[in-house]
Length: 382
Ligand SMILES: [Mn+2]
Image (tube, rainbow, N blue to C red; front, side, top):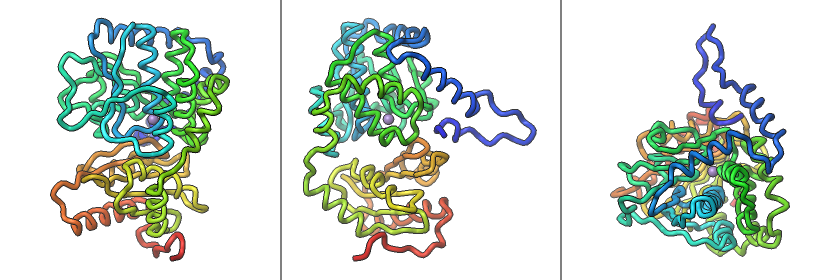
């Protein structure tokens, strides 16, 4: 089930289901799949025209992903830059806040061969710059777009946020498993062949985001993957998938595994101080694979922030809603049905206050998942 369907409020008795019901969405996804992958629909061409119109005349264009970007965000940004360079004659700057720590994601950046600018706290976005957000939205709490700034372009697959409606071009498709799949459709509409590097990056972006087409996948993601597969560089793809891992990776995994506790079908892993911020996502991905696990929750500290990542093995899960409920106004949170994340600023908190906060967040998860009364068991012995 897709996130947008899950987030629909339950229908009061006797009221007809909303027209955008699950069956309707499936029907449109099927129609999508019957389309030849390289053949763009009228709708895609119309969207492309609107997008190009929205950036027309821009002197400076900045493509911004979410902080600590994942492969879907990185490859989408490069795909959009290629599109705008080829069809609008622009030379966009690519940027994100935070860092890329995961070895696979660093390998992806190097194989894409594209430079990304780091957006720091004071390192603002100069006035007059046209901003395009990919794989994130204004005020999502996970990007470097200042609060008062309107993004000119938003291309994303997370549930739509009200703030996005202020943008002149918005393409949000929560039924898609990956933003990269949206970008593939733009390239097809523009009749642009992605080069081998970009095809490899977009393909990896989709596989990584959908756990190899097994998580929150739509027909569009499958079509985009099939289209890209014959265009990738297999050796570069292998280098991205299997990069050398630093000792800090094994240290973090070791610590998380020692701390990991099972409460019924839920595994929580307080990972302490993280080697890099995206480590929590890596840990949640690893732990959800433990036999008999329906939910994994990993959390840890990185530079004054408590970061957490949640995975569910159930296609009907509401991970995004769950994390938003638990974090509430303590920080920011977001995500989809089977994967979600959040963060809380720890400014001015002592170590014991941070421990108390982590504990209370974990308790809230256990409560909402209905396993608070389970006796915790260590995932592995010591
Ligand atoms: Mn994404």
